[in-house]
Length: 424
Ligand code: NAD
View 1 (spheres, helix red, strand yellow):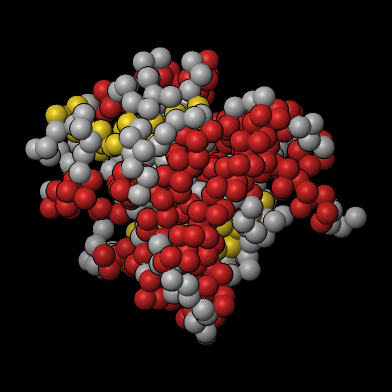
View 2: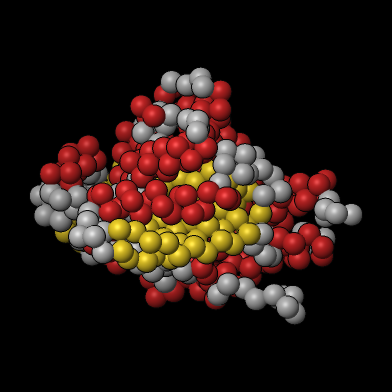
């Protein structure tokens, strides 16, 4: 697959290339387009200094990668984590291209990261790090070039600092340069619940096509952070599903009559962010949660949560990937053989980037929409794109992940074809 003089940034990126090639081959993708889309378009590595509160200067490394910008400016989050590396950032940028395309958003794929454990630094140090990093990558960034957003360990305050830093550097306030900002500073209503809302919408669509009644369907959710808790809340309160189990890093809780999610969220918030010790249910492990006899399983914690060993014991009929990459390649094979219907991450958790897109549009127009409007627009897009992917799955007699890739690749390929290979 590799061009003789090109090297993938690492093994994760190589795996991502395989996923792409599986779908590309099914649709006989033009060889020139395939060659072009296999590689990240731009990679920037920066080493930069941050003055700590004690006056010492520490050096950091950070990255911004744009995989492809054929359909529009790059879009994708920036994460702060001690394991950040170029392979991971490039792979996440690659996946963002397909996630934006499967939602038909006018964006390409990007991602960034800084290798840092933010818990070891004060808020002022994180502010200085954020502002310096954003200045370092500014040559790639802009409302028409590349629009970052929050990811692991970055939040709306950091987005506000990014926006302010860019604005100070260019001498004008530019709200549309990042998304995921606070609502009182150009952020969008509904952004924080958007991923969980999108997950709930596609869960309901998946139940529909399988002839399952979402009302009273039993659900288990792994992860009780932003995605997991919003999903559990919305799928139970608005769709009538019965969430019988949730878990987080501290373990899980099970109640066969259904959990009161608002009550559990309050408990978590008063208990250092963890659900451990919640009294209105029986404690269970994460493995037990994943293998419960439920209709719908929603992994919404981390990548690689569902391994081959767990997959063989999974009883759920539907899996909705709230997290990015929660199912290993081996596990997916086992699940597909068992007939489990898997809605892949690039479709299932795309509600977040979709409302980020709404934020960018609102900032560019300086005209803000209300929450009902945002929920309606999000639902319309998610239902439509779920339908496109499902239709493609039927047409190619394939799984939902490959179908989602096919839909996305088709759209990006069309943009590449129409734009051509400059200079011709
Ligand atoms: P978060 O940090 O708010 O929550 C993560 C949750 O997972 C926490 O409850 C944590 O305790 C739990 N967790 C961590 N390790 C675990 C383990 N080993 N077993 C069980 N639970 C564990 O993060 P989030 O924003 O909810 O993101 C979750 C996933 O969804 C990530 O894969 C992220 O990339 C993906 N995602 C998030 C968004 C978004 O808008 N937040 C959008 C798209 C995709």
